[in-house]
Structure formats: C-alpha cells, structure tokens
Length: 119
Image (cartoon, rainbow, N blue to C red; front, side, top):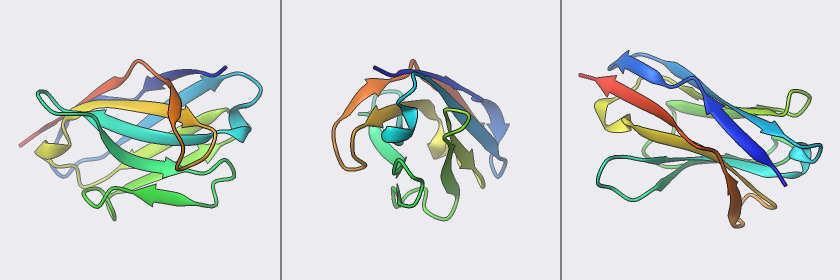
C-alpha cells in the first residue's frame, strides 16, 4: 500500500507560481505511476498530469500543457507539480494519486491541498 500526503497549496495571484509536493510512504513508491488531479467547487474531479514510475513518460491535460510540469524524485518518495502562469480557473483542490501503470486505475489518493488563484 501507498499513503500519500500533499502539500504546497495556497493563495496566489494570477500569473504566479506554486509547487505542489506529494510525499509517499512505502518502499514500493518507485514502482507506481503517479498522477495529479483537481476538483473545483461544483465540478467533477479532472485529470491534470501523470508520470510513469521512471519519470520517462508524462501526460498533461490540454488546459495545463505548457504551464504545469510534473516530476518525481524516487529517492525522496516524492512527486511534484510545478504550476506556472496560474489562472483563476486553476483554483481547485489538488490531489495526488498512485497507479500501477500510468494509464491504469488510480487506487491510492491523498487528502488534497487547496490552490486558490485570485484575479
């Protein structure tokens, strides 16, 4: 099993940057693909970005492509989401999740961290 804890959320002005972190427990972190998802008030949870176990493959939602970067440090059991050029529509609770494959089912989820972008 993997336990995930997100951090790094907060309030930022439009155009600003934040870096989210997701710390994982368990010795098998490096075998999991990791993803970031978000859920805005009144909306369904949506995919943001994903990274393979090795970090060699990444996927992004069109809405964040070119602005967000997902990365991981397997030695630190941590996955990151660097968010630049933030927009008010990026406001949401951001969740990290783990899956056995990058396009598989995400079975392990963190508690989420709030990101608020003011205009």
